[in-house]
Image 1: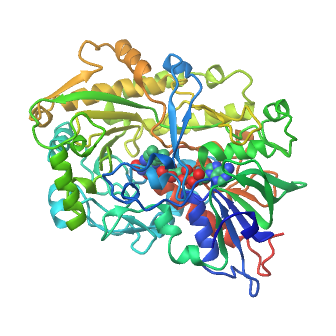
Image 2: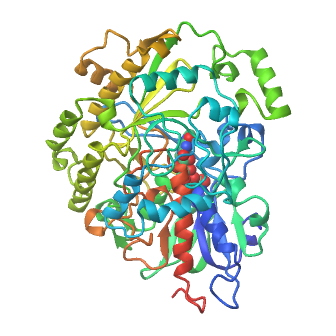
Image 3: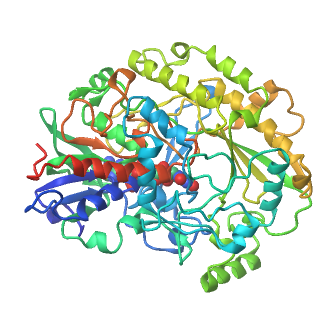
Length: 609
Ligand SMILES: Cc1cc2nc3c(=O)[nH]c(=O)nc-3n(C[C@H](O)[C@H](O)[C@H](O)COP(=O)(O)OP(=O)(O)OC[C@H]3O[C@@H](n4cnc5c(N)ncnc54)[C@H](O)[C@@H]3O)c2cc1C
């Protein structure tokens, strides 16, 4: 049931899930679907505590083309980024039941097989592509594109890599802006694969992607809709407390024994006990914050803040990864038809009549421009480095000359440096492969292209500098601390220039406005990138990495925190290396697998310990 406050809760639960976002709702749902778990008699009770509210079901939470309500967004501002001339950058997260999936861009894709095999290679048996594929399938109900869309765009009807009975809707909008076809033709003319099946382990090429879009309603499919609303939230053994923040995990010795929580804007705390496990799912920014506040983390950081050390784990908050992005402004001089901004009321070119007509079309027939996510789209190119530049060997050779010791902040724990080096070794093999991407670029029909470094070699951190749980942790993306990330984006920008010069893009009269043609040499392009790149593609991961402890890892392959009983982390923090993709479908797959791991650890008697 939906609880209103401390008075509504039981004194003790079998499991307490911290964060009712994407991963937290998956795990809570799966743990409550069979009330007894493996136990023959006792009902297993689960409590989810979520900082945000249940969304209000307003059009912005459902209609893809309407902006999601700002009240569900939280903005972190980073510390000045040395690699960006000391500019700061923003990180956005969803603070609402359903988390990021209530506000995200709805792009719903997976990385390449190699991306997940790298997790296994880093010391995590059971986490390769073949192991995760059943969980990607379990989480989704995939609907192939309509014959009309298949006739115009690459969208394979092959159901084999997909699930057809899972909670999250994955499907294609029935609408696309005509100019997207020029973009596909442009890539094809450059010899880039136009890939109709990017979800079977080879996520490379120009892609028309499915979205987290529920059919037949053609509405956003969030974790709240998929795993919470309806039957699940009514279960006798599933309690949820919203608008409350977990401020600390409580321990008896080295065993998690409960959590302390408070109203979102209040300071009056209460406790709830847990008999089996505390499951942390507060997202890649707040999960490390909570562990640090609770005494798990780097010794110096915690002792400096007078936080009693429960377990020294230097990697807590390190290994932070997101994908830096750069916006190339264009003019499409020969395009007179609609662009996404025509339905965007905040845009200078908002076209009221077109927008009204398209909205009416959406509500009447679930057709038209509002079936496309607000300011996003469903078309991207994922390119291996060999497709981006014939100079790929030079980029890799330069990367090999960079000593991770030299680019790590002074005082970085040696285990974290070892982990970073192990990752770079794997990633440079990926850079030389045609089977996984390093470059993403997007085109949604607007006079804009975004280039993204999908597999950055830089690493950042998320660390508290206050013991007040309401104070945001310090977000340091570490953007461009590894120079290879700049090299990759320089090559990416030059590749986009080739695309813009293709006959198909010239049919649209494509002209680059910024950085513009005065910016030509690699050094000039790098300077432009450093001046305007954003640190985030809103895919924060890695801050509580599943890796061996001597590589700076925090979680074992069962997602248990090293040295602590009864404490797991199941969200995007666990990813050791960011996959070359958007992250939500991977988060769902990880959480589905986590639920199975938790169930498997329940003893027949129902006792965890
Ligand atoms: C603006 C934006 C656009 C994106 N676009 C895409 C996209 O197009 N495609 C894609 O695949 N991915 C996208 N993503 C990323 C994707 O949505 C995330 O990777 C995913 O939702 C993360 O899931 P999570 O479970 O790790 O964290 P979240 O979903 O963020 O869940 C964490 C939850 O914990 C709650 N919480 C935090 N701290 C506490 C606490 N102390 N106590 C209680 N509750 C707490 C939060 O309120 C939140 O609900 C986007 C994300 C954003 C923000």
